Length: 249
Image (cartoon, rainbow, N blue to C red; front, side, top):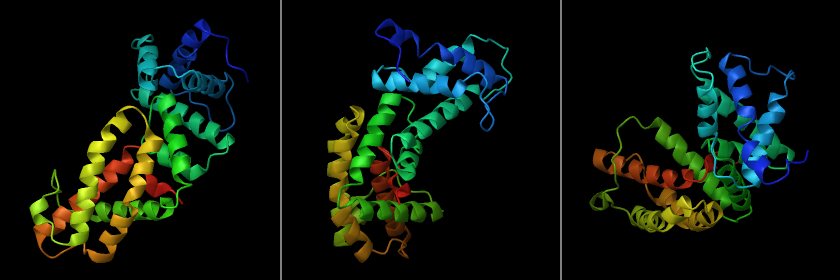
């Protein structure tokens, strides 16, 4: 279906369906199954497409909060903003599947819950490109391993990695790479240059492989163990700036 003609309609159309959608969801009237008598799914998808394809600098929370505000105290659903955003992100899932993106790529991006459609699209394209890289499979597996290790950790981690506690050459090298990339990639993340960021992060394959081959994460000494877990958390945080790569199959 064609988008409305430029330019005024592009500015007005994103806000137009939101009051209706917020009003119905705010009263607990989400579409059920295949039933959507007032075409809320199509309206939501239209909003997302306009915001994305015209690169409008609007986000879903802002639109939804303003729409919900119009109803005052008439809404019974206290979670209306989150529910509307979840509903609209569900439309994104369907749209990108129709565009040929794999389900796990979509899930990797949805895990970060980006609420600006143009930003969501940039992440989708970045992860899709990342999958074509030689290092992608190994780094996805490493992220999954790190995620599992951190999920089982019961001790509070450090705020930073303490260089003085690093013992093994492989962990020292990984820590060095992370410091360099952390500083280098901040402008990339801020500007939404996610594809470039993931290309840079692909260079971590070798030091990550070396780390897991030569370092025992759960060391007996508490300070060493916590420092290594902290190191892995910093690795994970860098990838999560774009998407949850551990969800890639």
